[in-house]
Length: 525
Image (cartoon, rainbow, N blue to C red; front, side, top):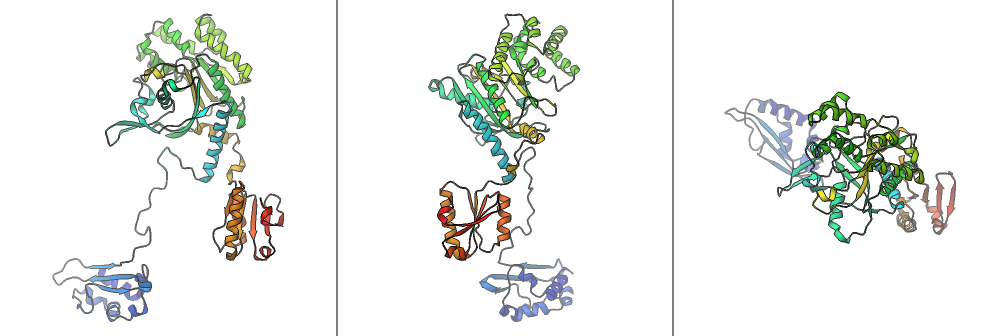
């Protein structure tokens, strides 16, 4: 039945199936074998009678139009029974994609694509990062996104160890996609050794990966802007970095009414733990729990601290201290000789000199979740409370020692691209000009005979420093050209018409003023 159906289709369509891959010539259609095949009654095959080899050869080959080869084979049911098969086998290849399943067009969950319209916005944001860092005298660095896993291994309980994209490579080395930039920065600093001039002020913009639960502003990959200072032990380094952060906010239109920066010190929590005789080895784990105070219910925090072996009075003392919101109250708790109080007072005094005092908020509960912080810590936050932390950082004087090197005073911050873009979009602060390209000129030869002249003009404009798009097709109309100019954000359209060119001129249309003028090619630049 399948063979009969196929032959009826061939008889009706004649050679339409062959034409799907190659068009047969008239001589092919006149071939006796093919004519006999197409005219053969379907019943003779459906009945199980084997067609004669003179009518249904094992294969029929011919030459299609343009010399392309094709092959047609047909096998009917044998007298002994069995499945009938009809096969059409053409030497010519099928059109691309025919018979293939479409691949998944979405990026891996938690990751992003950056087509040109999105890339323009990313480039704009990154340029602000770079401009601010350069204005503070920082130098840019970079490192591989793939690092040894041991570089990111922390004490048990630190959340980041459960979020690593880690695996063994083909040489069975344990590696990981970096979840943050600071350990890579520390590795490079150790690599420099004594050749590194102090203080070192470096910045980077790099991609980071964490397998974590996704929420608004939190993805499994993001780009992060880091600025770090090595070799300065005083809070002057923290004050400088906080100035860089607030400078960036101002440049993109964010004010202190939109964003604040919570500031505290790890030394505050350390002093409280010492007061209640909590063992030093519990400090890092307590920091991880305290870092969740704003995310979890109080009862949950109490249970987690109790799970670390802390007594009830120590738990109450810790939670009470973490509720302090002014430095004077903190001084009463820790005493006037507290290093934490002295550092915080100095920092807030310098914030007045820098001009960002109103951005700062003292919040004793800010400890940051990573184990390597040792002193001042800070965290940018959305004052409306709709977004997670915008940026964060602090002092980490012991990180180099943990990696096997000599300890150095170090301080820095990380600033992700995802949350700040959520904020900028909410506030309507992303420039409208980023919605289109930024091209100076679109050059359009109105005749194919002027193609070479258009190329010369486009090159001359490019050499003068202008951004130029050249229409490459010869069949485009003026209407299409002006639509493209609007789409790519061109400021001018340069038209080469035969009449104007004979007079040594080209026509220029200014797309901002809508004025048209005829000028010589020399006047274009």
